[in-house]
Image (cartoon, rainbow, N blue to C red; front, side, top):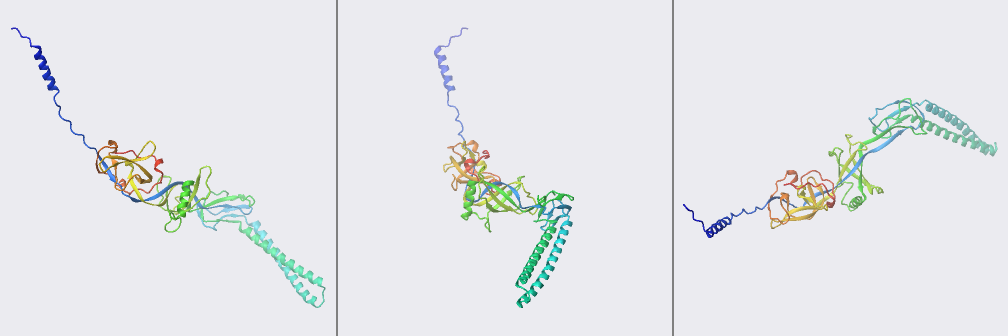
Length: 407
C-alpha cells in the first residue's frame, strides 16, 4: 500500500499549533508576603547617670612602728597578722640602762633641791641683815644669785628626770593606731637603734578603706563642675552613691562615699585621682586590690532604653537602629547613646517617644521595605528598664562590642 506524503503546509500548521500551545499563559505566582518583625515602643524613662572608673584600694591609716631608743629586743607580744589596739604593747626593749639613767636623774634632782633649800634660807637671812647694814650689799646679791642658780639646777634636774622617764617608756613599743599588723621585721634578741629608726612592723587600718580611682582630667572637670553646681553631692543624704566591682566580677555589697578629687593632673597620663571610702568590716578589701567603682552622678529623666539586639554600629562607629514608620516601612535612625543599663542601650537622641524599634527580624529587612510589626517577645531582663546595675557611661560614637542583631 502506498503512503501519501503529507503536504508541507500541513506540517507547518501542526508545528505552529504545538508552539502556540506551549506558549500559553502559565499559572500566576503567589504574591510575595510582607516580612514580620518584632518591635518595641520606646518611651522616656528615668535612668541613673553612672560613671565607671578603675582604681585600687589603700589602707585608711598606715603607721610604721620604729624604734625610738637603742637596745636589745627582749620579746614580741603580738601575733603577726593580728588585730591590735592603739596603745597595745608590741615589743619590749631591755629597760635596764634607761632605768639606771632615770635613777641618776632623780638623784641629781634631789641634790639640786637640797642646794636650793640652803641657798634660799641664806638669801632670806641676808635680806634681813642687809636692811640693818649687818652684811654688805654685795654679800646679799651673791646669796640671791646663788638661790637663782639653785632654782635653775632644780629645773634642769626635773627636765632630766622627765627625759629619762620618756626614754624608759620608749622601751615599751606600743601600737600608734588600731589595725592589722604585718610581718615583724625584728625578732627577740635583735638590736635596734633610734638613730637609724629601725623598722619593727607596719600597722594598717582596714575598716574603712580608701579606694583611689583614676579619671581623665576632662571627666574630672565635669565631675567638679557638677559638685559645684549642686547636681552631685559628696556629703549628706543626697550624696553620690559609689559601688564597687571586685576583681572576680562580683559586686561589693556595701556602698561607699565620695571624698574628694585631687587637684593635680598627672602629666604622663592626663588623669586625676578621685578618692572614695568604703566600710570593710569583714576585711574583704585588702590594700592594693584592683577594683572598678561606679559613681552614680544623677538621673537622666528623658532617656530611652533600647535592647542591645536592636542596635548595630556602622563603619564609623555610629549607633544605628531600624524603626518602623507610620506607613509600616523601615527607616534607619542614627542614635546618640550615653552608655548601658543592664542589657539596654541608654539613648539620649535619635528616637522620639512612641517610635517602634525593630529588635527581632532585623536580618531580613532593609530600609524602605514594607513590614508587618508585631510586639517583640523578649526575655524579661531585656524588655524594660529592669536590669543589672547601671554601667559606665560612654559616648555613643566610641562604643564598641554591641551585640549582633538577632532574629
